Length: 353
Image 1: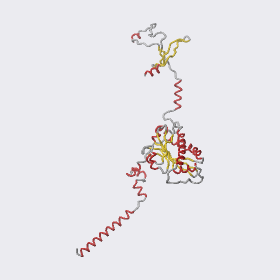
Image 2: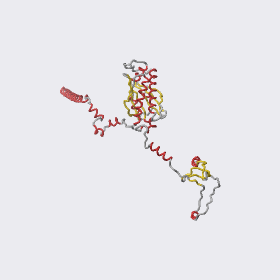
Image 3: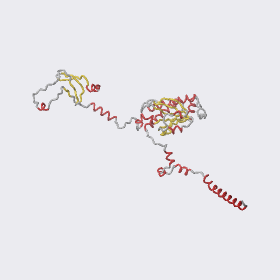
């Protein structure tokens, strides 16, 4: 290769290098640019009002697939309000301290979503409802665990409970929390008692959510978060009830108020029953029944006699309309014919069937 050819190749190489460098410099600002919040919302399909809801993106449809609307149970909210009142008194007696219990929220969600959101470390109590033959979950967070242990073991007031994270719960802590859970389950039994008898029995205590699976991960559940405040200490209790557990009393939980009956009126039922008891009925005493030709019936004249095919003293039948009721003996009392009931016919016929 001559010198001129070498110079020409070098010039071409410098030109290509400069062109590649320019393209990289132009692309660098775009690749390094950070998306703002509006662009992120647009990518995920959030925001935009009603128009955006109608034209959902694929990512938004995937995200919203986990948001399911469940049936509202008005009576369950009343039961939880009753539980808060009962539990406040019980925990005051249990801790000998000023305790306030309140409801943070009552939400519906899938069981698997809740297990993934349980704040660890925590204690998960599995309980069984004897009458409904199903299970539920009671979760006590670490803040309340340390607060209860501190209160029951004589901790000073005015100081927050000391937490030691990263270690398993001791036997003393587990025992004290089991006593707390027993108090909560007993109050839960009392809260449900006016609506339906239900005994909440403690089964076991777990610290790993994987071992506290009481329902399928896709099943719907009701989660009630209770806040327990003991002056400057406290924590949360989360009560999880699957819809399958509440199914035996679902009709009762749909009531707007205690004692509501769908399609029934107890006052009208009582009035109707009383009026039926005073209804007058006619009873026919049947001495004998015969089959006769129509011509014989048409030829009957005053003074003709019809012979009964029964012997004297034979039992007679008492009927109401076409329904035979009793079998009786015919007799006389104070110059009047009378019957004495011997047995009930309908019951005897029912026993034969």
